Image 1 (cartoon, helix red, strand yellow):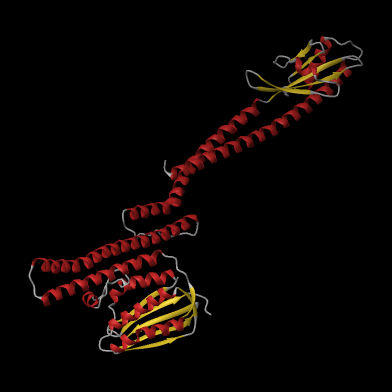
Image 2 (image 1 turned 120 degrees about the horizontal axis):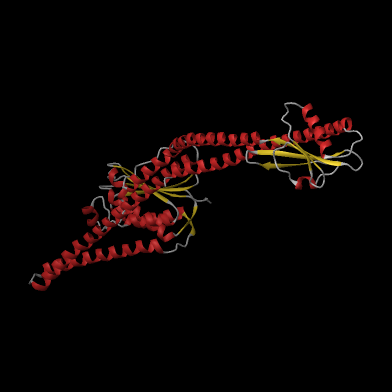
Length: 470
């Protein structure tokens, strides 16, 4: 069953229950109030008849004994005095002997048993033609002469009116529920329209269209649900994109790794086979052995760098307080000879700040970045190693005046085995793992590394340490 039908059915059943109980209680309360007024009226009528009969008896039958004839004459005189009243009474003694009866209904001894000189009783009786209210009281004619006077009042109309009210209310309730059903269905459809749109959006996302978003039209719970759905879709799209990027990087890594192994291994196998099967001169033998040695060293370097990358990702770092200026000066001393030989000037401007670092790994980062800058500079230039306090932390900048990196390449330079200029990088002994290792080291320090580059003017790397500075 659809949710809209559940809402309609539940609302209709709840309304039916409430209105049925409410209507029944209301009509019953009105009937009870009217019935009690009828009982009071019947009691007053019986009291009046009691006094009237006693008065007629005193005036007409003085000195006579109590007999059926005398009681009948008195009752006839009283009834004739109340012409057109439709009066129905019964007069009997304490032993059940009836002296007068024009009630057209049978006596009920149980009613008379509970009557005293100062109280009267009443009871409702159902007859073949309807309902009648029977009221009885005791009439004292002398010291020992007692009669019971019963008056009968027709109340069938009262019960018929109640039944009519029930029928009218049932018809009104049926009409109300019919109108409510239509309105409830329309309202449920209107209220659930955002959910249907949300369902369609979910199906489209499940079909692969991750750009679909739900429209937020209100600030209620459904609006919050649509907003949460959009937030979930954003995260899902981002995670899916990250998975695609990770899968692509993994595929590129495997392809690059296979290529990095295949090229030198093919040459090494070829030269080794030549040495094994062909007579060559001593010079050719030396050249072949030298090539095998160089490619073997490059493969060894590649394996060590892969091992470093795995170690950095898995080892626990032991951070120590390090004077960043001292580290920068140490790096200057290490690079000065090779930079001077290449005609490159290294400028170091570093504020005196203490950071929590793993000194060996972080020194590897700076050396790698400066070495990349050295390789990017042709025919002399300048390298900068700068450090300064910034809001909420400390930033280190490594900048070169080299040839720069194309904008479309910047997002991929930290991927393993990725090289902007592959032939030049291999000639200089690179394998495309340096920046991947640097990025992992920076991340393990809780820092961030970003790149900016302008082709023909150089590249700048920013490493930001979010920390309290000393």
